[in-house]
Length: 259
Image (cartoon, rainbow, N blue to C red):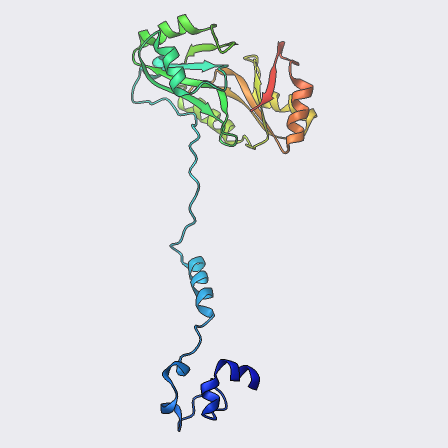
């Protein structure tokens, strides 16, 4: 220790001070002021970190997601459902602006919204378009239903009137039971008779199914003709596509691909 102290505190040793960290009453006034300063306490950094974690008002920021979700039809406007179009089987590359331009050729558009998967950010291949008048909506259905966009035959129809409260609550309960996952398949061309439970049972043999749901036109019990099945792994997704794409379910060949 003597050799280290002689390097760090040569002036103190010349004053025969035995320990630079101890202040002796008889000599304290003679020591240079800098030798009385303690080292910065190492605990300061730990304190600031623990304070950050223990502060009850501190809340970690949550990443905001810009993924569009299906919105319910406003009950304040009785004509909203009659003006709102479902547009299905659109290419993944079609965005809100492009869809709006396509539909505006047949009537005035109030809003166009493509639906996106909240995990992958990819288009779910369907959208909702609200027209400005019921007449515009009917004209768009007549002109666009069955036509092609990007080589895909699209399906266009008007969303129906809202269900009574009881039936709507049952549909909401069915929706809440669906277990979502980043490992998910889109199932298209479903028969109108296929239920969520039937869909889940049909896919169970291909892997560990977490959840299945048939998509319905907002505010109605009517099937949209497609659904989603979630799995626990990417391998299960690949197996389901390989095994069940173009398979028959309730008399119709279904399409299965990654959601």
